[in-house]
Length: 381
Image: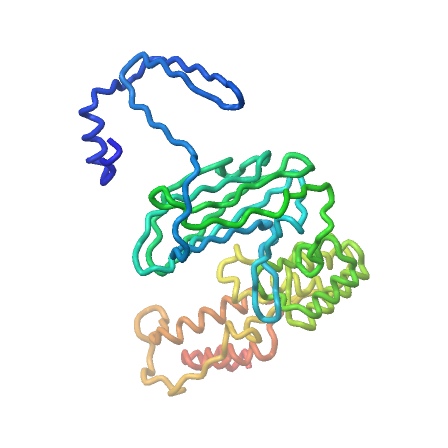
């Protein structure tokens, strides 16, 4: 049964000949603890397959094995830092660093195979003793892993500490065929969990947005690359309740050609006409309006002109005089499809203006002349 693992068909065929019942009977389990060790007595009430797995000491391999293993603690909410023009990972030292209770942390483990052949490894991992796994995590787990030659495999799992105190930690061990190939060196001491960790990265955006002073926020916004991943300007929106801070932040971002909808929206609260106009101009207020790119908007705070924006352009056609002198059919038709589309776009634009401008009237005169509607064009001119 243990060797029939090549495919589902192979496993199903092996199970079919074992005479196991589809509905097993209730087995009797008896756990006994004696002298610090725990034993289990099982009384099977129907045919069963018993699988036993345990963690036992294993001897070391000879030095120079082609397996490297590394393990690090990290904060899932603050994983990277910017050093110059590079983004680097941030890790928490297991001894010199401090952890907080009730906060989710992660462990990252990397296994590297430096040989040219694939190796099947047994990897033993666990979370600190007394910690609680989250997000499908585990307390302790041993898994079989195939690592191709000259490649790296990365594993992650999450946990949290339920209280303050000291927690011991058993690092990752990698074995093959009962021999220890590599392991992470044990920590020099227990993990320290305190209510308020002393070590804080004051250069991270998470700290600046939530804990720094307004002046430090302004210095950060003026100095850092705000387009890099991990910086969400809406996280400082709570600071915009103060008008002086709002004005300084918006002026600074405007000078750097950066816009954030959540920050600009506070222009309504502080009666800032420039910020309100920019917010309206970028906000999809007219998305539900048919052909909204052709609709002109003219208010005291906001102006949008489709012609100035380039969504509607004045086009000239050649020849100016039509080859056909007389109307074809009972109804006047525009035979040039390109001009017909342009004329309809212009009429849609003009119909949404309260008062057409002189430029609009001149363009309409030209379009009437192209249709040989001379009398109407002359009257309009």
